[in-house]
Image (tube, rainbow, N blue to C red; front, side, top):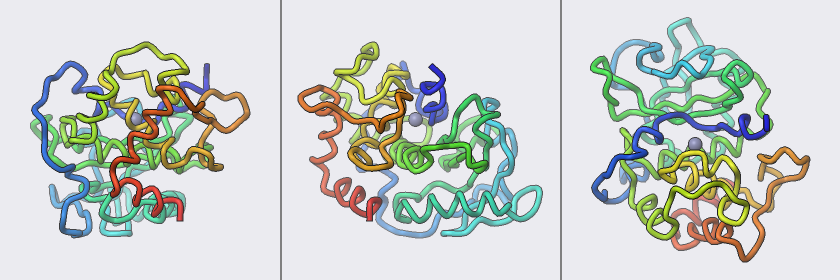
Amino acid sequence: MLAVVILGACGGADSDSATEVVPPTDAPSAVAEDDTPASDESDDEPGLTAAEIDDDTIAVLGSYDIKGDQLEDGIDGPPTDEAIATFAIYTDLIPAEYRQGVVAFVAIDQDESGGTDGALQDVMGPDGEPTGDRYIALDVTGESVELERTIVHETGHLMFGEPGGAPTSYFIDFNAQFPPGAEYNADEFVTEYAASIDDGGEDIAESWAMFVFGDTDLAGDADDDGELDFVPEGTIAADKVAFFEDYPELVQLKEDILN
Ligand SMILES: [Zn+2]
């Protein structure tokens, strides 16, 4: 079952809201109107401290503030070539307006992180509360065999959850159509990982990633059977993938990612 662990593509930001009842919110914050480049204005220090990252399950190799499409110097100096190359995959794949609010890049080692190759999480403030900024962590060692899929999954977390974990309207609508909490079964979930958090946070992120990359070489192999994952027609899982068709901006984002 190693593959299931390896697909552990996200962090705890979404698990915090598992039992929380949160009021509906308006438009998703990730798609805000202005396109000011994300930059870490929360402090003057380079990169993020361990307390700001607040996740001891990921093996951090370095952290860097993001300025537009560039990484700034981190606590230990300039970004490594591996960090720059990995961050470029992220900025090449995801349009700038869907990276808003992501103020720092955390370089991690997948093998040393229990198989996690990415996470999108809150930057924590000195009071231990989310600052409202997020960071993206990605494997920079080259071990991840589905980094692009993970990047799309993590971008899903940015779109579907507010800082602190409150759901956006997409997530509220998704959970209304597909009530969360079921045990994993192949008819209802695109991957086993989709059923791993019972608030539906991983379900929508995994379904979104499959909406973007289904039927492509980047679909991933979460069940580790040596074949690219696919979602059988006529299943609830297929309905979850089709959910995103109702949102023209998400259909457009898929096109932008694929082209
Ligand atoms: Zn996730």
